[in-house]
Amino acid sequence: MYVRSLGVYLPEGRMDAEEIARRSGLPKEVVVEKLGIVQKPVPGPSDHPAAMAAWAAKAALEAAGFPGERVDWVLSMVEEYKDYPVWATAPYLALQVGAMGARGLDLNQKCASLMGALEVARGLFATREGVGAVLVAGGYRNGDLVDYQDPQTRFLYDLAAGGGAILLTREGPGLRVLGLAHRMDPSLALSVKVPVGGTRAPLTPETLGEFRLRVEDPAFMKARLDATSIPTFLEVVREALAEAGYAEADLDYLALLHMKRSAHRAVLEGLGLGPEQSLYLERFGHLGQLDPILSLKLAWEAGRLREGSLVALAAAGVGYFYGAAVLRLEGGLYA
Image (cartoon, rainbow, N blue to C red; front, side, top):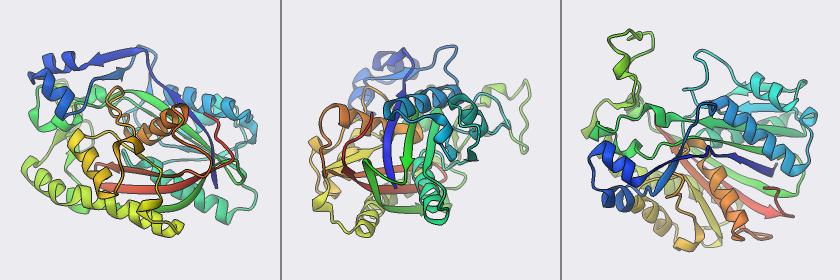
């Protein structure tokens, strides 16, 4: 299974560190240096999650010169907060790219959804001989749900907006998927959520202001993540490397989701990688499950990926999910 091409859509609007500092009351230096946000994309009036996913999907198909009617499966990782509630998006994506005969699934592991989609796609290629192409696409604008006056959600101030997609094919060229690994931490199952708008607390005019991301038990979550987050990132990358038959020293590039600067450095150092072997997304913020796609595209455009490059993707999603993938570039990439 190969990542044949990449597609990314970013809205034109930007929120910079000065604006985040103004809204939150934090010093600008803290926003830039600690949270690692110089600026981030913010949505315009037409930038809805499924729409942005469709634009990115079209870009991925166009980059590869691959017609939509040849797509066999559409795996949607459009974020749960999307254009309409209680709505499936794989059929919409298929409609938008002309994949009218495709099968589809909606998938959700929050910001680790790309890793889950790769696992599902690998299973499709392995068990269904007729599958030749799988389109994975997602859109994200959870930045709408950030309360900059809530210091307990400071780690979410980087949430941004955009769309991302990958075209997976049975044969190359592209980034060949060689290893995948996953972890889940059920102790954090209720840690981050929007507390109203579901069946437990239906949305009412009185609770509308609470339709924001909240942390249920900040002290427990911080203690748990301080103890487990970086080690788990390292575990999943090492497991994916082992499945692929490689070691940490063989890695050429790590596509890592946006996180605070100290955590990004800790993951790189834990894998024995230098800062030049990754890109820190300080000018893009956190696009959820789309971060590894954006990182790969930026790395390709910057000439950091060459024939034979060994690449790892790593991500985590609240819930808590962790995932990693290891890929090798064989014959070029369309991006």
